[in-house]
Length: 172
Image (cartoon, rainbow, N blue to C red):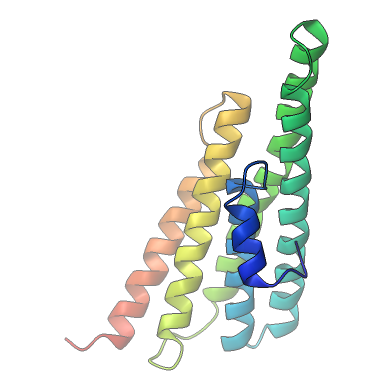
């Protein structure tokens, strides 16, 4: 996934049995981190975060494949046990995606908003929000536990960042 051409990735994403929302959430973080790297003094940290997010997309894809294989087992106790284990493991990369979305916002909040970077910072905020919300739903789906509170924190921070950008760059 890390080295695919975008058009190939999109075709794969649209196919049955491909990585889905979880991997996409991680890719939102990777894009957001790349944009932060472009507009901030923390380029090295942002680059490392972007690469971390790509690894999370691969972990998400692997977790989805394991869950799919578990669901294909013959009905019975072994299948139920395998599905439960796969669901538990699927929550791990999703939780990491939520933390990575928060880390991207940490970097973005250090950038002084202005016309030159306003659109990029807005994209960072919204990509971080999308990543956290999607990963939070993944945790909820796989664990049955309500969406983690960290998701609400990311959403609130994204809202504040977007409001700050608008205030700084949109004419009154």
